[in-house]
Image (cartoon, rainbow over all chains, first blue to last red):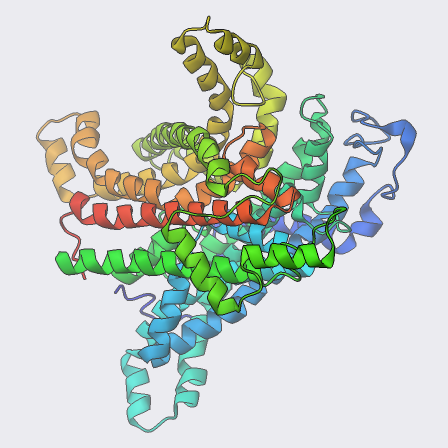
Length: 305
Length: 327
């Protein structure tokens, strides 16, 4: 197994290093833009979301910078409001995945034994299973609500976090100072809290940032197939509405291009920041390829490397 | 080696078994069952009871589970809930035959576009070209697949003169029934319908291949033996072709097998956009019609395919790279 991050890393050095990382700066810039939209969306959006019959599929104009959709709703206002739900789903699902994956990873990595092997088979299952079909099946069965979508995304993606954290925990556990502290009679709880967890948290943070990208990406799929929350406006649902009203064959590019562009930019942003974080944490891992979709490939590298 | 093989096989078998079980539990966790949702004139409580007995729903969960596994062993995926209740297998077989070539074509697009981009980036490492290629890969990889598909309908289809919906031309289908079309024409027509969906999947996944190719090439090009080869007077291209590309083949082939699980997700939305009646569109229709047996069958089939692709990658890995130590 590769020795992941051989030196202890303090969180503040990571953030200091991020300031000198160009791709991280680009990523943070992109994210700030959308964060503002998500937080202050209702003040920033120029129009309300009520449909108006005489302004259906208007091309961009001075009154409507991004035109209007099939119900005559101002596209710019929709896009700004959509940021909130899209980011919420991404962040919330990543946090749930972080808690589950982090806990499982630290406990299995530290204690090993039978529970470890059982839980690792469970993660194997989630790593192999086709993610979007499982999500779609679960969403179809359990109903269309934001809460369900968040939980479904988190319950499918916690496994990769668990595996990476487990590998990190195992390497921390075998370090000399941790072994000494155990030999001196420190309890498991003490070793975990004072030595293992602080060493694992920065990596967990990086993985969570990457996970947000994956969550936002996944939400667009589920929503696009008509399984999103009917009362929530997200970029996925805007794209779905555009496709359902045949905007693409009617040449209404203004209702197709912006929502997808926003998703792409946010995913790029989170990926850049997540990768930069990870790179600063352990340069030896050399994030050779893009991370979020192919965790299983990377886990091979970390565990068999 | 034998031990490794057995271990991988056992793992694949275990995963498929887990998938079967999850599949069973997921679809039994629903409120109500196949019969309670029925609404029709002859659907009296007595009729529903009889239907339940016929479907085995009156037995205990455990018995139902055994029944389900037994059925699967005989290749029985159940029947569609939609009248006239054809078998699920018959509903899935034709779509699969249309999706498989589309995924293959998409993978070819991915590999060709991705490897060329990665090659360019590694060739001029650190240059503007490298940054552009890497940036393009990241963008391609972050795009929602359905968005790219919609953009293609908007901008590319008209320009290339390619059809944007269906799997074949309805006029040709009639002509085929009359028997005055050659197989070549039919083949070309189906290929034309396949190109845009395959390209959408191809471009989204090209980013992965580009980044993987680049990092494998960059790593190899910094090795001493590459320097030696250059010092012997071999051209840069010869060195890349003879030394660097074979080393990149390993991660590329692994990615081809391992990405199937993610590609399948793209297939769902792309087939929906292009009304391409493959397995993805079947799943989407089964969802909107609440045809759970078809949904369950399709999901199971996709899972089994992905597990086998992973097994294949595991078995291929040591063949491609003799340095891999098997455990």
